[in-house]
Length: 434
Ligand code: DLL
Image 1 (spheres, helix red, strand yellow):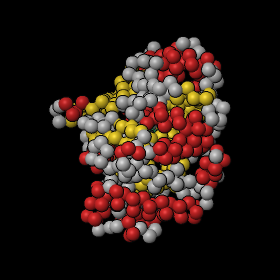
Image 2 (cartoon, helix red, strand yellow):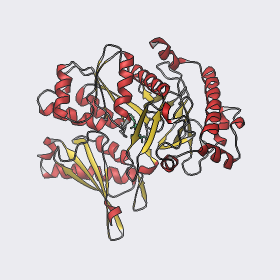
Image 3 (cartoon, helix red, strand yellow):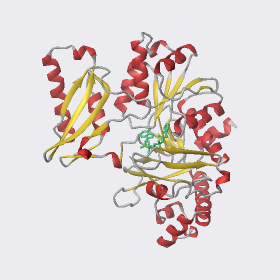
Image 4 (cartoon, helix red, strand yellow):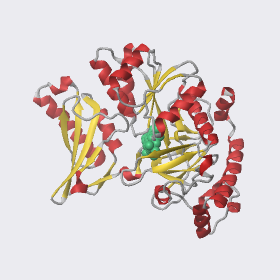
């Protein structure tokens, strides 16, 4: 079984495309027949499943988005009887009701398959001791990773998030070789390990399986240099399946999408037009094997580009760039568009800063203000004022020249910015309250 799963990543593209087309057809037919929403929406667009003759024809079909899920809360978009749904998860919306997703027993099988392939990409093997610090519960991270690790044959430690001291004790005592959590939570663990006098380097931890939130390559560099582990980016979203949609391999040059299950497209977020490979735009997925909730052309709001050239690792699966930002992440400050990840890269490229920061946006009168709060190393913090001023000027100048915005940079002591147990909250936008 393990061998078969492994081979799926190396299939020739012609055969893969044949399988994708077949699965797409079946999925379109199934949702058209079983989900009243899709019947109405396809009819309104003047398309029927038989209009799909090639993969490119998918662009004729209407997209779906988070609002469609909300409008049919909780189970209205399911394509199978509720009695066949063996599991639900939900993502906590910032406002109102959560987005609910469901799985049949076969969907759970697919999910563990793509998680096995994720761990294989990263070089985690049967017999590895893996600490799973993604949250267990309605969030998909914990159980998603858990099933994959068990199926691969790892010794899984179901820690869930939080309880940092206990996490560190388990990591040392159980000889953990890989950890799954958000990159921001790992930074917190590493910091606490250091403070307790047992830095990560002194443990057997070698690999980190990081995702669920945006993080930059500069952040990866910081993590790898300060802890000695190899850090991998994994991507997913509840609406598609959870974690297990895409994963970096040991070549670390993009994330392989498990496209025999999740068919990706890139569209222009403003016009909805399909964009060619290599161009950056909004990632859209059609789930071509899911039974309970197969969404058609689901708009993720995540911005990336796709690359079809074969990877150095030999996998033929398409690669996506690290997510650069979300369409709804964009801050507009005095007319300048800005993404938190751009600031993260600038902060972490200079020496003396710590990878903990927060962006605070406020409005004084009619003008917006951006304050970049960042922790600095204890040495820098106790440095002479002129050194601090020089570092501040350097960061402000970089932000000005790369983003075109005058920001106020404030240095705070290590430990001053709140740590997260799951997804980090990087932006505090006070303008909503003005
Ligand atoms: O975060 C699933 C997941 C769990 C992925 C564990 C990886 C690891 P949601 O809570 O539905 O699902 O949030 C999905 O998180 O649309 C992205 O905006 C963001 N996201 C997930 N992975 C990454 C990543 C899980 N590697 C939303 N880089 C997605 C950047 C990510 N953003």
